[in-house]
Length: 204
Image (cartoon, rainbow, N blue to C red; front, side, top):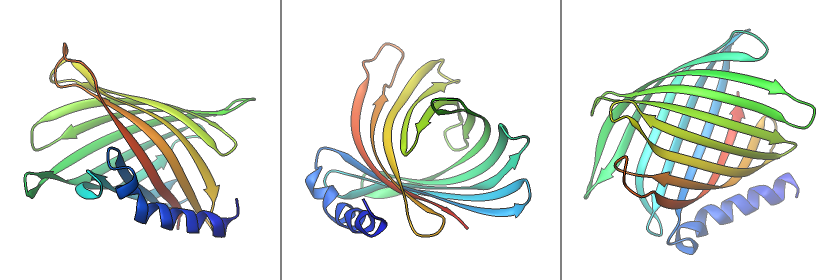
């Protein structure tokens, strides 16, 4: 599929998906990366989330630098401002994050393991998130687990399959399906949500 065809597809999907996938959430993630120094990049990572056929219920934006320590290892430091819909109003909260990434190019695929400590300042909740990601050509397969340190159990998981198409310049267009799993207590059943994700990554 050509870049022009992908752009048309994404525009049409963005306008129709909330109605077509009425029982499915629709996420719009993006990542903008700006080089600051040879081994330092600054990241702006916004995301919008829709549910119930088009209701905007959540948005978040991460800000922070990534430090390249070696060819395979980098560290990221982020602050994120969140707005989640509760009733008719949006409630703000803040996150502080520390990332550690390990990347390796293997003969058959590329591998990435990201560990993230994520501290929610408002309800005072610390989580550890571990992401395993495999890439082959334009395809990505990943799984991420969330461990709630305060409560002492895994309270969320996200499995993703995605396809990346090269856009104009340094823009990547990404379409994927994500299965989100959540539970409220250690003994509760997993609650599953289907998510259609349409995103982009831009190197400025």
